[in-house]
Image (cartoon, rainbow, N blue to C red; front, side, top):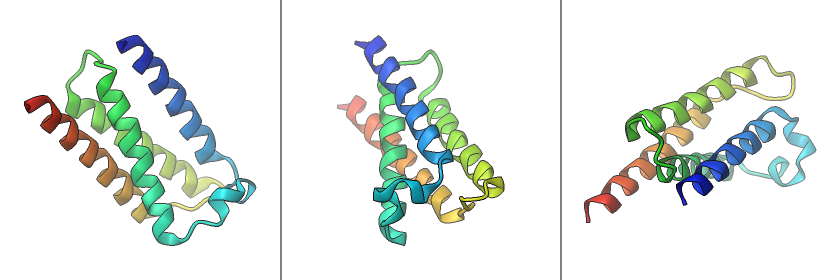
Length: 113
């Protein structure tokens, strides 16, 4: 089962990366998002990536997995700074951090009981 989660994790990271570098207006569903719903989507995506990453049981600490996923989001935001059709946003980073943190907390609480 762990290998299935790893496969899903890697495919999900590639999809998120691809969707993060294409022109946002080319994806009609994303082009219509409001400021708050865009941040909610960021939070949900990074929650999902972190939770799947934690379920994958990589041979590193859970906090390291969460940190690397947040770093992935940070690198994407740096790419957005230089991308002609995307924008660097601190609130995107905050939403990513919230999603990662909530996933890590839920995963830790789930493993306590």
